[in-house]
Each structure stands twice: as C-alpha cells, then as structure tokens.
Length: 92
Image (cartoon, rainbow, N blue to C red; front, side, top):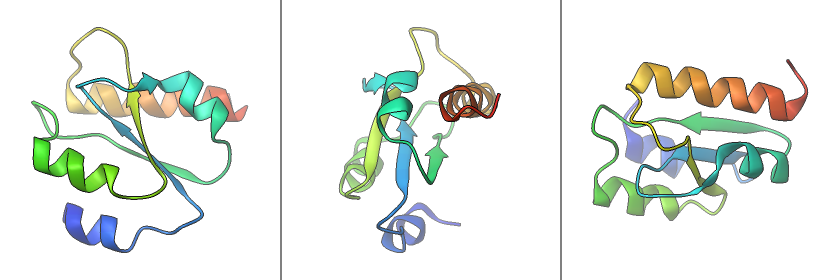
C-alpha cells in the first residue's frame, strides 16, 4: 500500500507510531502513554524523506518515536519496535 493511501484512510481511534530518525519520543515511553489500538510505521532504508515525515505528522494520532541511538536496518527497526510495543502492552 502506498503511504498517501494509508494516511488518507487512517482510523481516528488508532495511534500511528512512526520511527522518526530525526528524533521523537523514546518508543517505550510513547507506547506506554498511548495504550490501545496502534500500528507501527517504519520507513525504508535511509528513513522517511522530509515530505513523507510531514505527511505522517499531519495525521492527528501520529506519534514520532525514537528507537535509540543506533542506525537500524528497516527489518531490524520493525522487530525492535514491535518488541517494545508488546512489552508496553503487557503481551510479552
């Protein structure tokens, strides 16, 4: 699915955590502060470009998260973010 379509149809009752390599709330802190239905968006290698970040931030329930100081590959970032979310939600 293309990013504009995903964002256009984003449900109002669901948080959208997105890995923001330019900075964001520490992931675990953000996830604990916003329990409930959520999704995690991880960008491509090299991260989201400025236009993509602006589009994501325009979604009312989008929350930029930081996954720490290390540069992670996209698949590693996704696994790390899901692990943090599972821990915050009490699923792990």
